[in-house]
Image 1 (cartoon, one colour):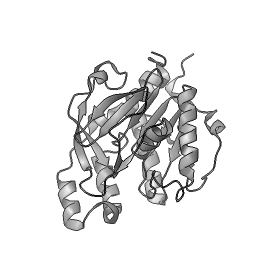
Image 2 (cartoon, helix red, strand yellow):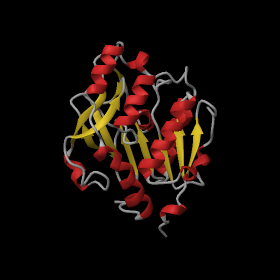
Image 3 (cartoon, one colour):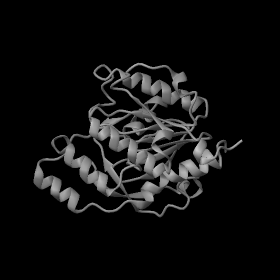
Image 4 (cartoon, one colour):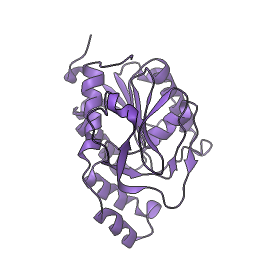
Length: 251
C-alpha cells in the first residue's frame, strides 16, 4: 500500500568529507525531494567505510550523492567504493528505489557492470544544456521535462557506454547523463539534480583548486551559470511518482 509523504524514510549514501558540504548536500536533497530533514538518514562513507547491504532494509529508497574528495576509479585508496557498489547492486536486484547523482551515477555504472573513464582537462563544469534521448518521453521522471534543460554538471569521470539492461535518458556531447535500469525503480544522473545555481556557486568556490585554473576561470564559469529548475524538479517527481504513487515500479 502506498505511503504518504510524511511516512517516507530515505537513506542518503554520502561521500563527502567536509562538514559544510555534508550539511549542504543533505539540505539540498531534502529541499528538492520535498521532505523534512529528519526523513533522510545519512550514511557517510568517510565515517563508516564498511557496511552491509541490509542497512537499506528500514528505508523506502536509496539516495546517492556526489563526491569531490574521492575517486571511483581508485578503490584501493577509497575502500568504501566496493561496499557502495555492493549496496547499489543489492538495491537493483531487490527493486529498492534508487536515485543516484554524479559520483552515485559512476558507482551505479560500475555496480551494474559498466566502465568509467577519466578526463583531466576540458571536462564539464558549471551549468550545461542536457539533451533528452527518445526513451525519455515515456519515462516516469523525464516525460514532462523539456529538451535542452540546464543542469549543474562538474565531473572528471564519465561514461559513454551503459551496462546491459540500462536505457539512456539524457546526454550531452561529452557523455551520457541519465539512465534507468530496465524494469526497476532505478535512476542515475551524471549531473546534479539536487544542486541549483546558488549551491553551485558556493560549492565550486569551495572546491576551486580542484576544478578550476584560478579565480579568473572560476569567475568565467560562475558568470555563465543558469538557473536549473527542470533538473531540480526530477527529485520531487521521484518522490511523488515512484515512492508515493508507485508509478511503473515494475514496467
